[in-house]
Image (cartoon, rainbow, N blue to C red; front, side, top):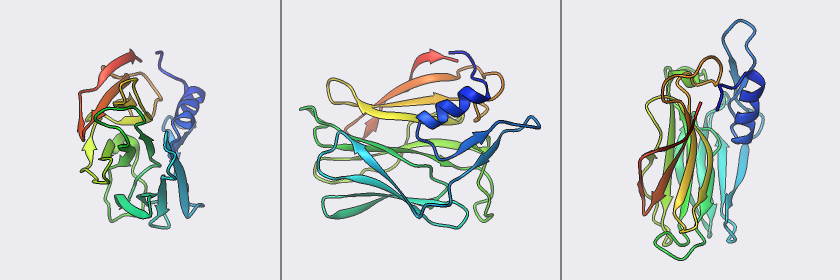
Length: 205
């Protein structure tokens, strides 16, 4: 995978369903913006037929969002109000240990001063977090399935055995602009029974 230019970077992030989108830099520094126009961003849970959905609720006028899993007559908080980007989720439909379980993953911007109403830049800290909801409704703790370097969520799905597969893009710069850092590329990690494996490199940048 060659290092994408500004146009390709925009396409990668758009395909990833990210709300934090870079604008091509005019002065060498990419500019980021976050959606503050929608009170709620509603996303489906892939493979689900029971009406579950992930809701990102605006928690501040500057773009912080709370993430909630809604379905089955209940609401479960996935993440409290913070610099959370829209989540991706999937439900396992294959007979096995994860049948009817749900995995929800999202990016959280961690940098900057949390008391300042300014969206942190991805290069200041970008975590990839996942939570596992068992078939009986028990919600596990957040798991950091990415790297110390900025790691963008791409998709959440399942393999033929019904194990959840999280696809991610590691980018040391956090922006997809500029030259790649050692270790950057497309990775996949498996998530089963509330535990995550180690990321496996699929394609280097």
